[in-house]
Image (cartoon, rainbow, N blue to C red; front, side, top):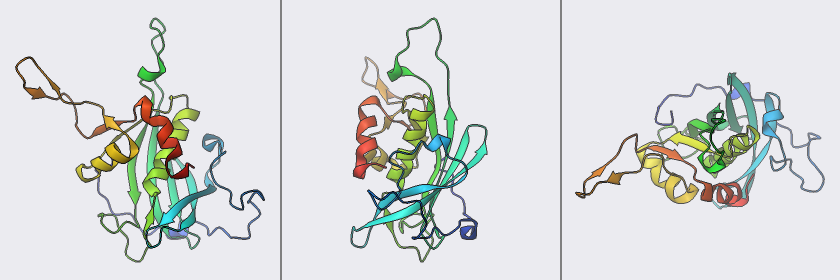
Length: 219
């Protein structure tokens, strides 16, 4: 879960450096990003680049994305710079739940989803996962969630995403990404508030799916 704190081992050497002269770049953009990539059909290894911002001057920067299968319907995505330094990491679990054939299908109530686990930005200084020496890169979390959303669409999960956040990150997910509590607090006729379920369990509601896909220019 996202609220599991762990020490990431020094695995930078696992990721090959991606040469700036490598012939994988379409001429009309200059950079091969994941904009039109079917991520699910990609094999393990390097799958493309994402555009992020340097925190120091807000200038654009392109980082490398690697994919790895970690189990049945489980995948890990890693982001590195061109020097092989690990900048971020995310694990996802694809949970396809087939609807009841006797009920009318409604994509807004489809229980299928991608569960986002252990989303980390190792370059962000104000987190327990920060690795000294890394330049702070913004939009890492946004790009990871857009990858998760793409995999949800590709897996016929209607773009649904779920995760469990730590308390200090909750406002970012609610106010910036547009997620909502899966189990919001309710009330009764006497004015008492109560909740059944984890308040840090968040979902991506239908009205936030398109905005997320376009956030910071999208993948």
